[in-house]
Image 1 (tube, rainbow, N blue to C red):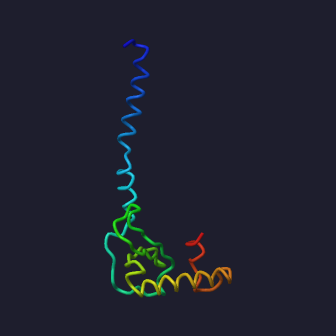
Image 2: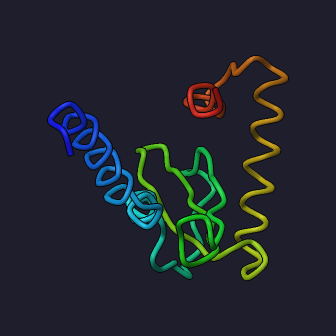
Image 3: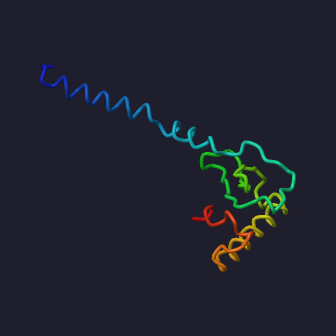
Length: 119
């Protein structure tokens, strides 16, 4: 090989090493940091919850769950709504409260903190 081809070959080898190093398994491991590994069975009081999100198994996480965010910005893991009736009722309550607060433009004590969580 001539010395003129050597820089091009080194660039190709570096690019190939970078592609191999950044595999999808690495990306999935990073996203799993925000997953609930276990869930609590204790009912969460509706007064302390601002919002929630659904965690879906197979999208970087190993289990279905609902992650509630409290007024103090704590994340609480609960079973999926299909597994626990109280979770379904709490998510419905939060959805209804959010709908009412949007209707009154987030005025009032019950709507404090919701506007920033939903934007």
